[in-house]
Length: 453
Image (tube, rainbow, N blue to C red; front, top):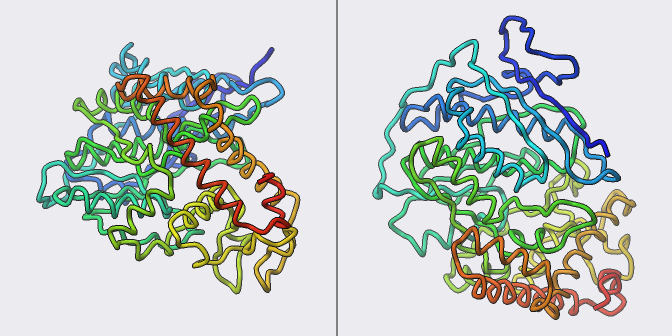
């Protein structure tokens, strides 16, 4: 069976023509298809950016490009063959067996594809950015927080400030123009992702997104002389997609401890210092995180966050952005708000889930009806929530639960028995929150009828 395959030749902009570009290669031009924006990158310069660090960012951008341009053929299985030819400053380092294995191990675990690389010396050396400024820290070990506009990022940041008041927070922010401005989390420094990847159409699964984002977070940690990147994701978001798999999909592992463990190994080689990732909220539900924040009296500002990943150009109300209310991110958000007693304090495009059908759930004054794609999004995510909830009754004998528990234990170094006990507990808490959220809806609710609760 032929797998989808691509060979991507990464070319330096304005470099001389080369015979290395073979027939069938997809050409990716640095500075055009993959842009490392130096006006953003210079804000990282609390020490000189090394050639290896610049190579890492180049490779991360090239990986994202290859991942997007090669479409999967789901009828042929999940896996693809992705081969990249990349110009780097330190080709001997990247060609070494240890570095090559670390790079491929993390990408295979994350994406489920076959990856291979050829590295060659760059034709032109990049003028590296030197130390620009000094960061005055009360502690020599700042914590780097990969952050979005989301609720978990907000809650985790507020909890960290309470739990570790002596540690400064450095925030690495994904910029999503459709979300507007991200809420202020009180970080001493905020850095944006300096890599932009340009593709048209392409593969929608884009599993390498987390590799690019967390590689940048690791770079930021090295630049500010930190040693820890703190992942804000709750347990349902981190582990749920590995437990509930759709068809022949590879498990989604964007915040999985196994992925960050392997990435930490690669980053430690690149920066020649120990860099690691922590997952302090992995055994908590989103609702538990919100409740912990409420107990501190620090929940003000949660309403500025967003959990909906959908295109905001298609979901506007009275000229303003609005969250859909029925995608996976919104359902988990609404369930968490219900668990924390904060429900009913914001509006969604599909606002009243207690109505008998989807169209009657639409917010008053909405300009469009429910489409097939809207229902497909709802059904896939609501049924995934259901399947995770139903695992509570079989967690002790479920092979998938045991496999994910084993992966976590290997990554964290914890014993398998205690890891499985915590994983079972997380699933049970999710089941309680989900059935409570759906069960409080009227019996005629289209959402409740769909979920058979």
